[in-house]
Amino acid sequence: MNGIRTLVPVALLLCSAYSKGQQLSLFTQYRENAVIINPAAMESDFLAFGSNLTFGASYRVQWSGFRSAPRTQTLRASFISKRFAGVTPLLGGHIINDQTGPTGFAGVYGRIGGVVTNDPEYGGFAIAITGGAVQYRVKASELFLRDDGDVLGSTNQTRIFPDVGIGMYYYQMVGDGNFFYAGASMPQALGLNLTFKNENGQFYTKRVQHIYGTLGFYKFTNGGDGFIEPSVLFKYAPNAPLNVDVNLRYQIPSSLWIGAGMSSAKAIHLETGLLLGEALGADNVFRIGYGFDYPFSSIGPSTGATHEINLTISLDR
Image (cartoon, rainbow, N blue to C red; front, top):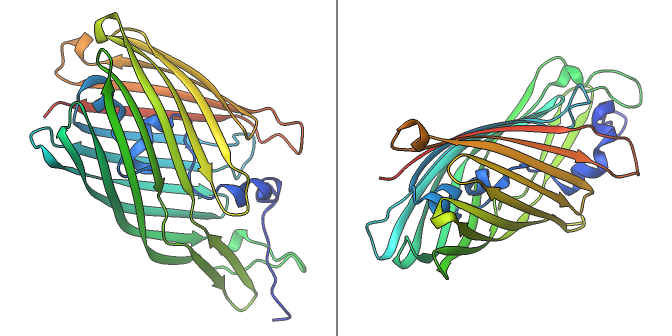
């Protein structure tokens, strides 16, 4: 082999600058996937509705104008005990699958932690970790070597590595039942370098640690049936600018929510969803939400819109 030969498909070349800054999966409705971003986070269902057992699923298509656009699917579960003071257990886990063109990863994680609190329904400080395994994969036949047009190979390549995430989270009831929350996390604490190679060449990918921060406030209205929630999500990766998402969500009492926001990466966010369950006579909260992103940067090619669907069911146990 005459030196290192690497190829990136055309669709990935168009977004290569973005990929360097954000290697982890993105979420428009990040509050619905808070425990994936931060293992110590409290679910929206717990803070807004008092439900301590939550199951959720999401499907996201990013940069929908491209054939090799990123697609992400997640399943998650979380539980916080409301029966203990001192340190109350925080449990759960999630499964995630992400595919971008010929490259992708799938991970399975468990979650364990504790909330230091006098009463978990009023506030506390949580510390938690996630641990699991991630499979990184490359479809070698879809990677072409840049200097001669040959494919990297005919056999798909895979690697499996352990992964760990860490987080901390503080929440507190203030005023007339309102909640303030703040958190910081590193969902991928183990950075690594991966090399996939065969007789034709090599393909490198590097995973680096990302740091996330969240701030938010639930202001309840109509006797607690609705709320207004401003929130901010900070994302940082080495050698990339700090990204800031600012969002505002309004829960219309017992039925519908709407939200909007924007990021420093020059994208707008819109979301809406239905709150079901109690209205249907069920002893749970069921939500279906839709998120939409669109970039408005005048620099570089348009990457198209992003669409995201979230389904959540929560119970008080």
